[in-house]
Image (cartoon, rainbow, N blue to C red; front, side):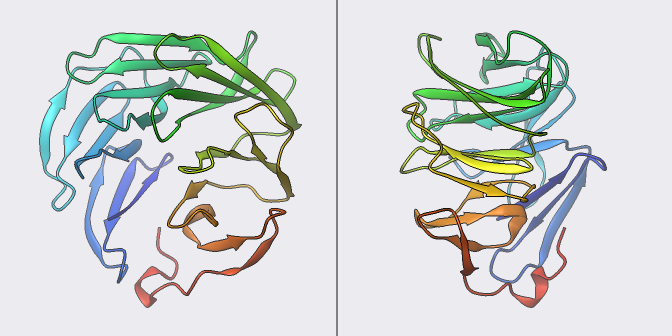
Length: 239
């Protein structure tokens, strides 16, 4: 299934990926993530529910969060949720079973905005990114189990639009007026892509990067090469 959640209208649409056909829509959803068992974890404010992916029906109401969700990611084992709140430039980790907070770290020492959060595929490192008070990107990496900070990556100027963690190479793509691919080892950015702003997600093989739902292929320098296939008729203009 493909999930599209809109911040401004709090509306989520689930589609069949092969046809683009709308399966269901649901209001009152600010953020949504698939869980490892194929369900959907949906948040609006501090409210958190599990939805059936096939129908959108509520399967479980979970303990409320401490603050309104801005961005979130589910752990690989499905037991916990990491999120950034609307107010406060921190990353919090909560156990979904009881709602207890077990992880909390600031992304920036000052003020900031548009905080994003991600996890490596093994769940052992959590990544927070924020536009700081100098309007530059601050990316911090922590050990999930201990909370020890491993790296601080500071770079380009401009408002963060999205972040994605590669499931194989573990590079982190932060989209902004100057999009960059960061190495979690603390090395310099692998590539930079001026002029692209939008959401970020990796799909399929290790060389496919899909911004804003449009499949595109990157070469080794981060240059757009071509679309990967074509969008089915039902996907044209899909929101």
